[in-house]
Length: 221
Image (cartoon, rainbow, N blue to C red; front, side, top):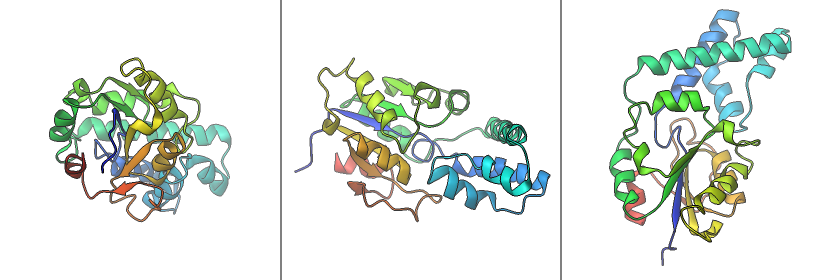
C-alpha cells in the first residue's frame, strides 16, 4: 500500500526547470577564455552536481591562480549563466505544470533548491507554477547545502506552519541528483528520483523509487 504523504518538496533545477546544461555552458565559456582544457560538462557533473562543490578551486590550482582570481572566475561564470537564461524564454520541463497543478489540490508543496535566489527569480519570472507552492527555499536560506540534510530539515520546520505536527516520514521529496536524494533521505523523508541526462549515471540506490518522468508521480500518488 502506498504511504500517505502530507506534504511534497520539490528540487528545482533538473526537476521543475531544464537548466543544468546552461550552467555547464556558462562554465565552458570561462574555460575557453582562460585556456583551461577540462571539459566543463564533465567537471560540473562530477564536482558541482555529485559533490555539491565549486569547480573553481580545482581550476585555480591547475592554472596556478589565486583564490581572488578563482572567485573572479566564479562570478564570471555566474554572469554568463544569467545571460544565457535571460536569453532563453521557457524552462519548465514537460508536464511539470500539469503535474504540480494537479497535486496542489491534494498536497501542500514547497521548492527546496541549491539555486541562488537571483537565478531562481529569473527562471520563474513568469510565475507559471509558483502559485502552487507554499514557499521556496534557496541557497541563501541555509548554511549547509545538499547533500547535508539541513535544506530539507528547514523545509520540514517551515511546512509545519501549514501542516501542524508534520513528521519527516510523512513528506515526499522529488529529486534528480544523488546528493539531493541523500539530503532528503538523511532528513528522514521518502525520496523519489527522476534522473536527467546529466545525472542518469549516478547512484540512486537510496531513492525509494526511480521514475522516468514527472507525470509518473501522479500515477504513483
